[in-house]
Length: 253
Length: 207
Image (cartoon, rainbow over all chains, first blue to last red):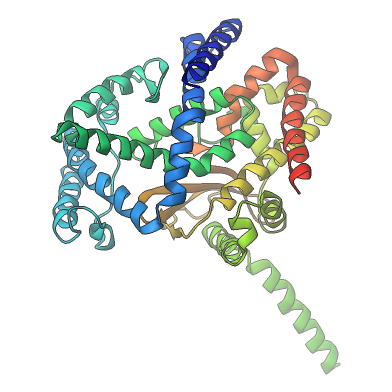
């Protein structure tokens, strides 16, 4: 069983590497497209065989309050470093909100099980070191697709390494408890993505490209805290200049 | 005479009413969202993942407020210029089917989220505006959901839907450009049509 799984993953990867090589890599944001598509195929295999079924099982078995507690617990731990990143980005006000959240949720919210702070109006933020570097002006670099971790640009890969070093969950002792925490968090995050699976499956012409472009748009948006400058013909901006007039009218020649 | 006058007066009132009740973009988004969610909350089929029923709902309530030709133009980008009117028509039709299915699938994922409407920043006389909302759910990250609207002659129409910073429309640009490079505009139309057919057939099987 295990062997056939490995076999199918490997053959998928090889097939994808071959077909990926055949596709002209003419996207400047994705110079490693052949490699990425191969890794994407590996991940799809792993996801279908392991992560997704486990996440589905968790989603089915765990009642909503349990899932909320699990989500809140890890969200509370993450708020410590989110505050740090906000400080690094020159947003001390938001940093204090984040740490205020940790204070409230750890005490009143019983060790982070309940997100009391949000109800008090202390809004949750999402920051990581990749965004911090982005706010410093570090270019995102090439798009990469990693096994298990998934999509990351070069900048965000470096950010992910820093985030992992700073992640309190990785320092939990003893190791088996740490591993269960890391595992549970992964499952929780995968389960949260379950509803998007069908949307991508039925909506994407090319699943790999759809996820890549969504990731790049999403990160750009995150670096600018939801208010990216409008590019001439880029995500959520206005139409390209030549389309300003009604697109229904055929272009006169 | 008096009757005639009151008739005119009535007509006048009716007309002016029709003209002055043009909805502000944020009011429109809120009204349609509330209408749709009220129905979804009461409909166990849609919550259970019945895409076809969700599509019917979206077609009835949401479609009239969307500007699909603008959406298609946005998604296609610069290749739109070399598209003939006839191709534009077919392309818009296929892309519409694709988007409606995507949007409907998102609706079936609805559980018990609440929608928070953010204050609208709009200068008087502006014809394009972003209406920002936030979907909140217990124990999970809130999702930003923005609607790009433009003012056409009679009303505001949605031309972009942006989820967590991801435009459901421009997210297709790279894949579309790839299809156009491979098989021209007709190739792109054929690819979307094939995708649409695939799920039409799938649905018919399951019933």
